[in-house]
Structures are given as C-alpha cells and as structure tokens.
Image (cartoon, rainbow, N blue to C red):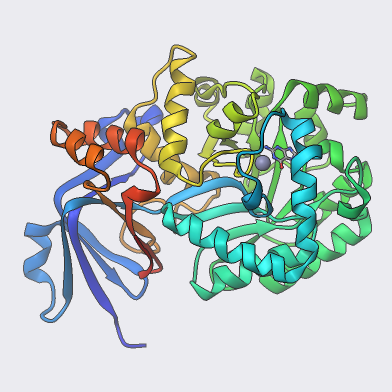
Length: 434
Ligand code: GUN
Ligand code: ZN
C-alpha cells in the first residue's frame, strides 16, 4: 500500500497520564503551535510545528487551523444505541423509567429496518460530538448489534458493542432465554469480534434481569473467547440495590453477584456505581475492572453523586459515560460540565486536565486500549478532533479573556458541545465536518 501522509497544524493538547497519579503538570503535553502528522491512519509524528515542518517531505499537505485545538477523539464508556429515540423522557427514576419508556422504545429494534435507521443516526451523533470510540449497549435483538457494527465498519471506527442479555423481570416481548442469549451472543462474537477495529462486549443488562443460569453462561462466554469485553450496570439507584438484595439473598452485595458469576476482570465495565462502598471499589480495582461515570444520567434519573475521589483512592479505572438515553447529551464536553458540578456538590474539584484525562486516556485505559487510542502518541490510531474556538459567539468572546491552556480547556468543557467539534477524524479519515 502506498504511504498516505497528511499534516495538521494547530494548538495541540493530549493527556499522557492521570493527574491523580503524576500531578497536573506532568499529565499532559501541549503544543501552542503544534503539528500532527498522520500516516496510513496512524499518528506518524507529534511536536512543535517549528521543529517538524522543516523535515516534512515535499508535497505533504498541511491543514492549518489558527483558531482551533486538536485533541484525541473522545471515548464514551457507556451508552445505549436503542435509547436514541427516548432521550429526555419525563418524570421517573430508574426502575419506573425502564418500564415506562425504555422497554417499549427498545422493542422497536425487533425490526431490522428500524435498527439500521437508528444505527446511522446514532453513529452520526457520536461523530458530531467528537466521540470516536464507544462501549455500546444494543437491545436484546441481535439485529441491533449487526446494524451498529455494519455502520461502524463502513467508517473504520474503533467500537465495542453487545446484545443485551435479559431473561427475566422484563416484558415477554423483550426477553431472551439463558440458552438463546448465549447462542445469539456467540454468533455475534464469531461474526464481529476482532473484525477491523470492532470488539464484542458480553452484555447482561443488570443483575435483576438475568437468571443465575444466564449470568453463568455470560461468564462462560468470557472464558471461551480471548479479549472479550463485559458491560453491565451496578449500584445506580437505591431501590435497584434493594431489589438485587431480594433476588440474590445469598450474596454479600450487588458487586458480589457479578463476582460470583465471574464477570469481573480487566475488560469489564460497570456503569454508574453511584452507591458503591469502599470494599466494592477495592474489589473492582483488584480485578482490574472499570467504572463508567455517567453524570448527566445520574442527575437526570435522580440517582445520586458518583464519588470520584473514592475511586481514585483505590486506583480504580474510571471512564466517562453519556448513558444516553438516561443521560441527556451525546457530548462528552457537556458530560464533563456536569461532572464538574458533581464534584462541586461533594466539596471536591475536577481540574480541566483530569477532565481531559477522563474523556480520552482514562477511557482508553478503562477499555484496555491505551496502546491504540486516547492519546496522540506516534503509532496510535489517528482518531482526533478539531475543536473550534469560535464555535459560538459567547465561546469566542469568553476565550479571548482566557490566559492559559488550563482556562481555555475549562471554558471549552463548560460552554462547549457538539457545535464545538469542527471536524472528527477516525483512522486518519475525516468522518465529520460541522
Ligand atoms: N439499568 C438497567 N438498565 C438500564 C438502562 O437502560 N439505563 C440505565 N441508566 N440503567 C439501567
Ligand atoms: Zn446504562
């Protein structure tokens, strides 16, 4: 294959470590006038424009953005494809919200045409918001995952998804069985896992909607295939936690249910974890599991405040999740805006560099993909964004008052949203232009 090479000149910023581990100053690299060289879908070089431009071979095209910031693509570690059509559903908390809005909406995915239509809308929305990798819940129907992966494959996106497994405590029209859930998941794994940049996630919805038999078979799938992901929900809502205690009285607590069925591990991501206790955080960290912090959803469904400092104390991997449609925005910038407020309400701070970490490298680490995505290090996938300093009149005016990259970054996260994302690139190809 002939070498294709292109360069992008702008202010460039990426997170290179967790500020909680190395301090803020050592956690990022910033090039005020930087150059990003992309070669065959990967990052070829990153540095100061003044240092790299002289060595660039003649004929390499350089795109110049004098008023923009290049960052890695954002990583959403928890979102639901079949809830795209029900964002902003009024009035309920988790369990009533599921029964009133979620299950009827997800039932529409029995129709493959509907699945294809929504998969296209969903992927466009991810890319419009600068999300280049997501860990995605399908519906119980395999066609939801086929539709999603087929659309993602066309654009060579790095995506992870799985069909929901649920064989009890949901309407008949939306349940599988322990056996059919296992077989359908297996067929999807054979078809998609490891194809291009796609990965499969075994997806028991949450403990209340799976029988012990189904949880056993979910654990079995994880042992049958290497590098599979596992995604589910945990300790989001107090009524939910009480229900899990009633359904699994023999287990120590909610996490212990998943632990018993061998669902913890380095590629396991647990959404929410709002009410996790100290011991549960320790066990999650010990097994290399990750938690998806979903602030817009936790506010919208009245679930509570995620305790990020406790997770940090245990060195637990944390990524950010939009949790659409419990969450109210596809934008990880808006998700960070809400995450900041979650910390404020607990008397803590979320620095803009920790926020950048959570949306990029932290998400990549939660997914064990930090050698491929989440930074702009040479050799990694060229999944990156161009963020426009003049996206709105207010942003433009406010950024004129900013005196540092820290302030610029914080304002981008407070005022920014989909309008801020001028272009999105995946594997070096432009996949969105505002
Ligand atoms: N717990 C079980 N299912 C769901 C879901 O679809 N959304 C959220 N937020 N929590 C859940
Ligand atoms: Zn969810």
